[in-house]
Image 1 (spheres, rainbow, N blue to C red):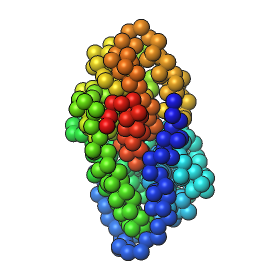
Image 2 (cartoon, rainbow, N blue to C red; image 1 turned 180 degrees about the vertical axis):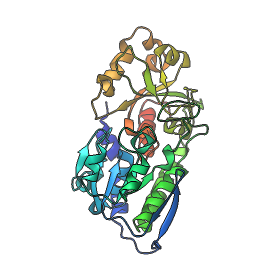
Image 3 (cartoon, rainbow, N blue to C red; image 1 turned 90 degrees about the vertical axis):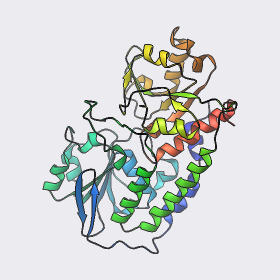
Image 4 (cartoon, helix red, strand yellow; image 1 turned 90 degrees about the horizontal axis):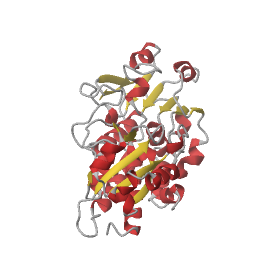
Length: 341
């Protein structure tokens, strides 16, 4: 099995090292800067000096923008940092790979918190709410990609009625680069992602088939329901980008589905997540693949019978900067299997 690290290294990462190191030469931010962010209005009188990246996507965007010297902490990492960011990330204090406490963040005297998920600062967050940060004078910015309604799906992740696309990611990169007055770096990073997306859009199945995909994030146990990527989330975007579709019809961002339902979806390809957190045994891609191959019912799924099982960074199943890397990983493996041209 090709290692995840080598796949990441092969996916155009060197270009982003240069992007992060590029100095801002033009397009300086005019302060005060006011932005509408996920239903809240946030104003910045100057660029933050003591930022926390709360959630992997937020932390990695800040690092890709070359802002490690402006960061005093990070937390909540499902996967290890991107390889080309390891050196920069080593300069930033890791509060925890899981959810931090509100007190542990305030202990770093932050003036800004960039947040990846509403579960970390939303109305039902176990950490803190946005207004809790407001009360102590700390500005927050929540990823636009994860501002979802919980009206129809009563869980913290919400549901998505339309297919996610990278315009929301570009908005996040652009606005964070404005906040920190590094707009040139933000635009260079966006241009890199656009070029890589265009290249992938040319991927087609070998026989023109519209391949169906299931993206399996993890499960507490083989007998438990599986957390899979919902129809319109980042997983659906990847399937669409590669000329296929998500076999899961649920609009919930992270539906939990029993194996009977997954078998009934009859996928051509199963993408299994690789996670570094080690919360459950099935966080490991080898454990997932072993289960798929040995369970007498599951191993009759076309994807399993045809050995169309591929490994992807689990963080790429979230709508993040990792999503394009995940699409590149899946495309590379499917081409090796002869399923994509």
